Image 1 (cartoon, rainbow, N blue to C red):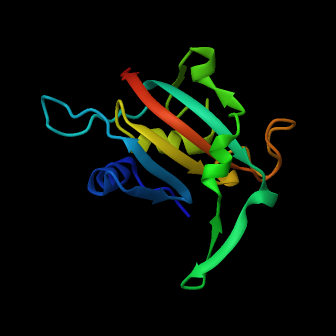
Image 2: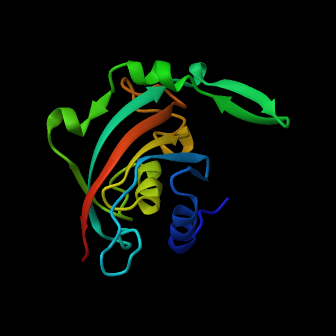
Amino acid sequence: GTLPSQQQQQQQHQSQLPSEKKGSGILIRTLKRGRVSSKTGTYTHAPPRATVAIHYEAWCIPFADVTPDTENDGIVKHAIDMERILKQPPFDSSIARNQPLVFEMGMGQVIDGIEVAITNMCVEEKAEVTIPYAFGYGVQGYPPVVPPRSTLVFHIQFISYLSI
């Protein structure tokens, strides 16, 4: 399928806060709402091609640990024991390094799932983002840290952005 446009994603984001948002199998669960602009009264999103700064912690769920869940009207979903996953130490953390990740949107500098998440998030928002392998490290994974076909879970704090 095709990804929705940024405008559609922003409309979806604003209409569904603070619930869960879904797009392309990526699940974004708001943990803390972001900043509302004093000028416009709306949430502040990064424009396309902005340079953004985020803090994150990342966990990996190997494909073998993702179990099918067919309880929902026969639709196959995947049940993830998130509580158990988050008790493990993250495989990567900008917080532990005390150094935010800074990257330019739309330039392929991060995995696709992070780009989609940031497009849907607003400044100062904190979210839990579940990313299927197709939008993470793919079928091959990122050996030896991320096994093949791993689902990724990120806790992301959208710190700020600079426009170009």
